Image (cartoon, rainbow, N blue to C red):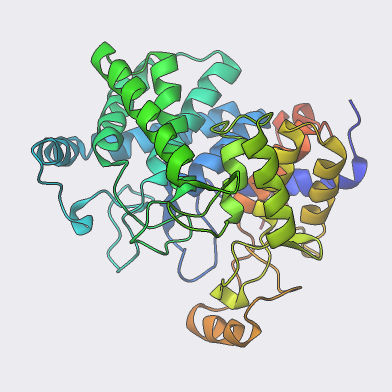
Amino acid sequence: MSYDPALAALAERSIRLITGMQTPEGAYPASPTFSAYVGYSWLRDGAFIADGASVAGQVESASRFFDWCAAVTVRRAEKIRWIVEESRAGRPPGPEHMLPARFTFAGDDGADEWWDFQLDGYGTWLWALVEHLERHGLDGERYREAAQLTAEYLLVSWERPCYDWWEEHSQHVHVSTLACIAAGLEAVARAGLVDDATVRAIGDETARLRRLVAERGTKDGHLIKWLGSTAVDGSLAAAIAPLGFTDAASDVARRTIDVLEAHLFVDGGVHRYLGDTFFGGGQWPLLTCFLGLAHLAAGDRERAEELLQHAAATATPELDLPEQVPGHLIAPGMRQAWIDRWGPVATPLLWSHAMFLRLGIALDRIDPAALAAPQTAAQEETLA
């Protein structure tokens, strides 16, 4: 072990934010003060946050989030069965009738308009759930109904165009989304959380999904942003690690990492994609950590450590990690327009803190045992 004392304070702040802001229902807020995110929890963001909490030893916190996911899903059992039946009959419901990407803390659909039809979160929560159960030797029986419903929903929907991780480009089928779906389906099949017929269907459908990615989701030997594209996206690193959709030792993984480094890493941070205009198109610390995890899985520990330090350097003096930083903007003229619309960049972003923990612990630079210890009253006071 080679724990880094310089990272300890940020790690402690990260785990206090994640556990301290978790709602009584078990949801993780995306960001406590950002106007467009207040009051909502995303399955995708939350699943990665829960995965970070689980790795950091916060077993109860992560379990409570998965309990929330399960409750949200089972509550919509009738709707899911209708979507499945209609889809199997060749009448797939329109995007407005599909499940949303985010929910209120109470588990309700959002009342305001959003770019809601996203499939990645449903795969991601299944993947993170099984990782959590296997990591800590937990019984997953209470998640069986929710896992079955979610798997059936994904099996009939995975080929459909939908919004990507960034709630954009709904006309495309996104490779990062497919990676989340495959990882989740294969996880619940492996864990025996779905019935035998669904296990067989998962084997068939994920084989088709992987063939599709090989044929139309790669270009010049690397993963691409969406089927038929030539561009890349920072989220593709997650397909390598932690999702494990693409073998880190493969030529595709190595080439994907190289292209992400060449196209999206600039001045210590990773952009979402070329052409990004959201808040000017800055660099996202959480993507820097995803790229670090991909490097580590591929065997480049030194580069992974550099990326961890880059991500940590984006923390504010209060040790809050933002959604993005403006050090190198792709579209600087667009930054003020977004500030005028929604206020300053989301800070802190719990997903950023979770990915920092995930990479730091994977590198043995952060001590999970110290983070799993109960917080003192004085430590909890600093969260306010």
